[in-house]
Length: 399
Image (cartoon, rainbow, N blue to C red):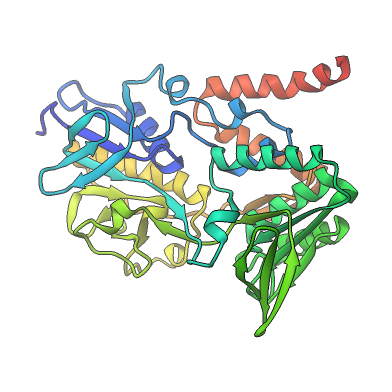
């Protein structure tokens, strides 16, 4: 029987990492097997990324979508370290931290997520805004405030990428800026939302048309200068004046993961088995954007998208399988259940499909909000946000 010295170290406080830690703390541990659970993240907050758009437009407040880890973990036995990871030392089973030195572990969970990639396109790194985290959303909100304050005739925004993030951002910003907004989506493919189902794509295309968003399909960015971008459409370069460039494409794994002496997918992700363990070491688990399931015969696991839904489901399996290895119980192979997809398509507007249901408009918007409220990590945060949503209209009326 494994003794009480088990130490589970979880790298990354996003959906995969945080929810794995919470599930581990909720599982039935005997006193002799109860481990130490450690969660490490460079930031002090868990960011509920599907709602970042609402923070930019002022529909939601930062505390609602990015509660502090100290609040979320206060009633648990999870130890949180806000620190930068400088090295993952697999030879000595240690995590090296910038401020807190070395941490030993017996079980390791790698859930570091992805980082933005600019594909080394000239001028992008210096002159574009990314949209992945709370800092990015705050930068965008401040930039929009400055642009609106300068009272220009037009505010010209180019969004690189016609995936979910690009489309949702475009709809939100077009509605917020109104007639002043000149928003275009630049997509290298021949359609937007290539991974979406036909219903959501149709509703999204309608929402973009109604909000006057231009689509530049089969087009790539060649370079970015201070006040313009150069677009490449089938070999022809066209300069387009812009006030703001938003970058929503390109993701790569953390350099910490690339340097590990483990098997990697060609994209840099760690190869894992059906139990979410890396191939060379059963004591190391990986999930979310950090991982790629290798050689599975389960069709439900082929080409699963790097979404919050996947990370949340993986967290449940990861926590159980760690518990099972410590308590000498059978492990569960990961099974992915596609619950559908949701998109916000402007203020008080959304689309939703899944489990035989298709919705759009205000009712889809309200349903999406309630689903995400249910998905918040603790019941205390669910209660605080739910109450604020109920009383916010009253606050506005009294202003």
